[in-house]
Image (cartoon, rainbow over all chains, first blue to last red; front, side, top):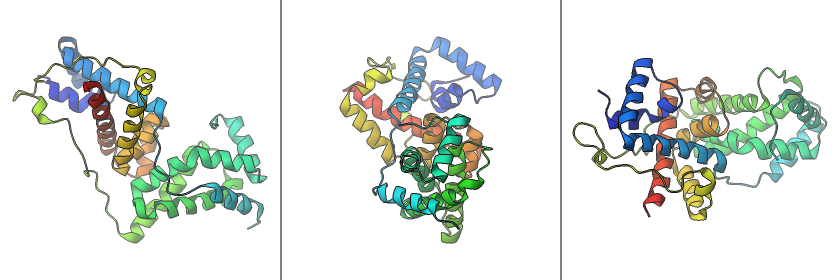
Length: 79
Length: 201
């Protein structure tokens, strides 16, 4: 018997199509009867979409201009 | 400007790089440096990541005339930085932990049969555009992302943002598919919790 907790743990795998068929079917039927889980899954889907649009970045600790210059110089030098 | 990963555009970019075109170098570094940093931090940690990425860039530019285009330029660069980071890990004898800072959905949200206690309502602002119109939320998501453990950030960046296949993510980070899926889910859950807090306000 699928519970809300199972859906919470498997939400990513469900959305990415990474579950075995019997588990997928179990979650699918749970989603039909549980509005909270259906809303939760939609929220995770929206989180992923938002991340794709925002594209947060790693904090960079230095300016990359000197690196660009160094690499360019390197490309001009024969080995 | 974003690099278009189709073959002819990449070939043109590589030719420009080999010819020492300044704009081409600016373009490749602005597109891929941050991503390479993410992979290096995930494998070797913050302290050595910058050095590993710089070395990877130097190796890549030197090897560029021999690049055969069997993978995309992005994937090729990620493998170079990944290999550099892995050998650095071996040298430093570092261990990677998958479990740091993981906050699962609180068990208080479920009753003893595993069902939710409170009803979850749909978000009022649900589309990315509506969510990101809130500058405070945008800043909070960025902050949450940066505070995620590096492996989670790298898995999320490569899979959700860069569209790499899971198999490729696993190869680059040298982890199993089940571990990669756990990391991805944890990262998404962390960011979901951040957005959820704003919806509750």
